[in-house]
Amino acid sequence: MNTMPQGAPLRAQPAVSLSDDDLLDSLQRAAFGYFLQAVNPVNGLIADTSRENSPCSIGVVGFALSVYPIAVQRGWMSRADAIKRSVTALSFFHDSDQSGEPQATGYKGFYYHFLDMHSGTRMWSSELSMIDTALLLAGALTAASFFTENTAEETRLRKLVDTLYRRVDWSWAQDGKPTLRQGWKPECGFFHYGWDGYNEGIVLYVLALGSPTHPINSDHYAAWTKTYQWENLYDIDFLYAGPLFIHQFSHAWLDFRGIRDQFMREKHCDYFENSRRATQVQREYTRRNPHSFRGYDEDCWGLTACDGPSQQQSELAHERRRLFGYAARGVPYGPDDGTLSGWAALASLPFAPEDALRAARRMLDRYPEMLPAGQYASSFNPGLAKAEHAAWVSAGHYGLDQGIVLMMIENYRSGLIWQLLRGCPAIRSGLRRAGFRGGWL
Image (cartoon, rainbow, N blue to C red; front, top):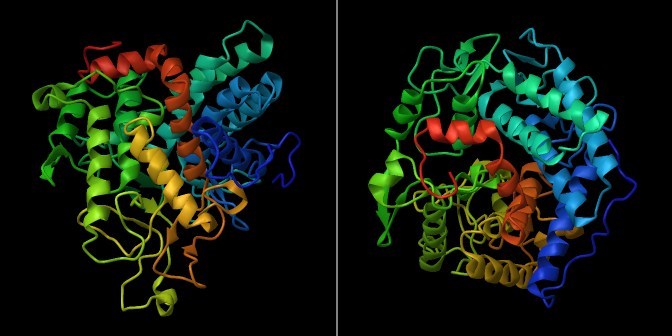
C-alpha cells in the first residue's frame, strides 16, 4: 500500500474556530487522504482499515470510486489521476476470478466481502456479499456518470462499468425467496436470512431492479418493505432502524428528497425526512441518557456500527458495564456501552445541518483525540478514559467511515453525487420499478 502518496492532502487537525465551510473542507479533505494512503496502486484495491495487514473491503472500493470525482471537483486530484485509479480498480474486478471457488474473487458478478490486498483473492472465509457488491457498483456507476468525455480512457472506464453491472445475476441472489439473501459461501451456499427489515439495502434493491440483464421483480421490493417496522419514539413517527449508518448509506448515492415509494406515500413521508427524524431520535436518546454514560447529551451523539472497546478493556470503566467491541450500536434498544462515532453525527449533515454541525464542533472541542491525524476515528468512549479528560479512542481508521462522511459532506455542500446518480439510467429505472414517484423522478 502507499504510505506517502504523491499529492496527499495536508491533514493538520482542524480547529473548531474555523468557519463552517473551512471546517467541513478540512474534515472532508482529511477523510479523502485515507483513500490515497490505503490503496494498492497495482490493482486499485483499498484496505478496509488502516490497521496492519488489513484486507481490502469491496465496499470501501465503492466509496473510493465515488470520492475520486469529488477530489477532481475540489482540486485535490487531477482528472487523469482519478481516471487512472478508477480504471485500475475496475479492470481488476472485470478480469478477476469469477469461478466462485473458495480462493476466487467472486461469483455470478458478486464479490467476496474481503479480498487479499495483493492477490485479490478471498480473505477470512468471507461471504459473497450482496450489499458490499452493491456499494462497489454504486461507486462504479458514480464514476461512469462523472467521466463522460469522449476520450479513450473515459470510454474504456464506462465500458468496464457497463460490463460489471450487466454480469451481476441479481435474481440468482434471491435463491427463490421473496427477498434478496444477505450472502453466499462456497462451503454452505446461501445464508438462511435475507435483507429483511429496514436497513441500508435500498441501494441494493434499486440496483437489482434497474439491471438490464438479470433484474429482480418489483414484487420483491414490496415484499421487503412489508418487513419494515414503523415506530413512534419520543413522540416522533419514523421508520425504525437503531444504528445511524442505516439512515445514511443509501443516501450517499441516492437523492430521496421528495420521491416516495408506496410505503412512504402511505406514511406521508419520504426517506430523506425519515433520516432527519432518526437524527432527532438519536439526539433525544443521548439527551435522556438512560444509562447515565459520561459525555452523552443532545450535542454528543452518533450511535452506529463501529469499532469499540472490548470486554477485555472493562477495567477502564468506572463502573461495571458490558463492552461490545465491533458492533452495530443503536437507539433506543441498544446495544449501547457509551461508545459514540463523531463521523456518524456529521454524516447526518444533509438531514439536520444545524444539529450535525453543532455536534461536530462540540465533540471536537471536548474530545479532540477523536480526530487522530485529522481523520475521524471509528469511535470514542468518554467513559473509558485512559487519562484524565481523555476519551478512549478506537485505533486506526476505517475506510467506510471516511467514505460516508466525505460523501455526505459533499452532498450537503454541492449535491454532486446526488446530481450524478439522478442522471444515471439504471438508478432511475430501479427507483421507478421500486414504485418511487414524484420530485425529480
